[in-house]
Length: 199
Length: 142
Ligand code: FES
Image 1 (cartoon, protein in one colour):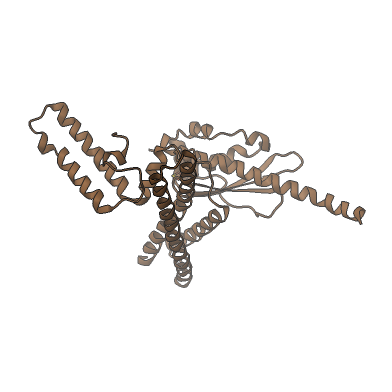
Image 2 (image 1 turned 90 degrees about the vertical axis):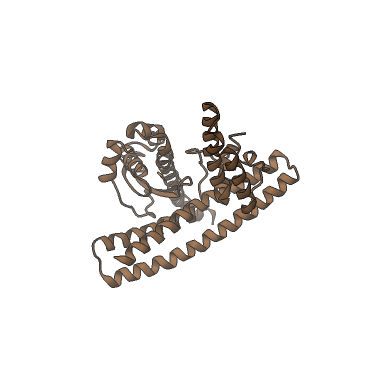
């Protein structure tokens, strides 16, 4: 049970989770596991409660975040493994991400060498526009993910077979792959825009 | 947490740069690591007669280990035939650079990039090789 975060909270393996309900469950469990309740307990019990508390915190952090939740499910089912994902993102997306990274680098270098103000401004404007379009992409990808999660929940309710579940998980995995490039880029762009604003 | 070799490649990356993508003798591999969203481009220039990789360039937007892995990969592929270059495994890179387990995917990126670049060269090379045949065949057909 300890390695199943859903069961930890007494929840089914569904991906739409009500935040308030999850919080209530979390607070209830942390109350039970609180060290104050174990001051007079045996040492092993105290240790156990500490261990469970830290598991509880991990579980809560993971399930509270809609994306981390999906990542967790896929990792648990062996669909997503570190260093094993051979599946590539669409080449156009990689190209785009690469190009934008190049403009980012250009701006960075211009900033570090105290580059020409007008040139920097042009670079910044371009980057800002590109960053915005990637933010929109991120929102789209998140919508896609939400939609598949809803399908997954329906499949769980309908007690769908393994084949159906694997198809859905493969789709989630593909979405997460695309998402990681976009999210990485969005955060790099906003960091650079911030730094070059003060420069 | 980085080994000395990683730091060396990171500070003095070998073969950073680019080659013209449309050159028929150049193969381009563009790959990414979905674990972190980092991207890498590795290019090779292959002698069509000998199939030897005569030059290699890379550009990586990623962590230090990814930069070191791709830098090392360009060093290793240079002078090898494409068939030999295909034998390079990410585990060789992990060993050479003493990468920790959390950085294995960075070395996978470099292996994938070599494969993708060679794949691209092969496809573009067989295309350009078949062109003269096609034009030689069409007058006969008419
Ligand atoms: S952390 Fe992304 S390639 Fe190393």
